[in-house]
Length: 391
Image (cartoon, rainbow, N blue to C red; front, side, top):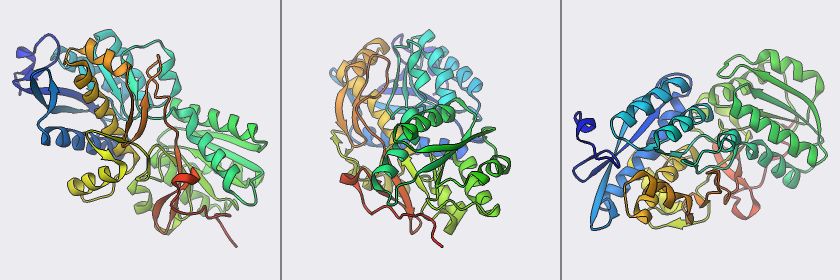
């Protein structure tokens, strides 16, 4: 495979009947845990497609291979790597982890006339730049905290009256917080505080101390794993115990969250892009339940939403190739733009900006050390435990 760049066809990098995809992922740095979850989702997609003989294109089938490179959790490194893929003739790109990296990579993809299947960049700003070659399968960042607010307003008895927001200062987390603030005010909740701290921080005590005197009914954190764990640990250390507990984005559904926190994770609430109860099916992975079975067979663990989103992004490329009848990037792009389909991940339909406008998020709660769906009610596995902190 080392000679792939010199033998690549003008449309996409191939080696015989193998189509090579590129992915710059975080295998080191602050987002390494999430990067590994994303890789698992991509790898399952490749294994599933290849196990069924590859993607049909005209009279032949292409098997898939992903060329991975480590971006070190640095968006500027992601862009360099995606440019390298382009030099090697690799035109179909599976996105990096995180909104910052996908924002940076989307500009490079547009310039290079590549195609980006974005699994983990949900910041609304990515899709406000006029790009035509980036397609994001996940619900936008503005819905992450907003979904938590909607779930609490519908399910919590007594209804929370006050809320405080803690947020990392990266673009994604700020967009999440902006959406959550707007939703809280829309429902008449009083926002008693909003504090920001450096992205990737494992010490959020200063922000927690500013929130403590406001005595909020619930704290909502716009965070990733490192900051999310720090909030739970340090809130307990500082004696901060809002009666409704703490809700966070991104972190609680990841296996490392409960592993690191143990009993402290109990009753933490979170929004999630996908659960094993998500409705929908597709020709490659079947239902969400069937996807869970395939993932367990390959990795011996139950998938969470980062895994599923990565597989779904890969699936959109597969469907673009299959329905476009070509591996030429413009034809793949055009076919992806027309997708309107059910999948194991839920509905996928892209608007003119490349945003998936057909799916909603779910809300989970850690109960007995497992994430269980509590909202929407139609998909729920358990009732919301509320108040989350008693006594």
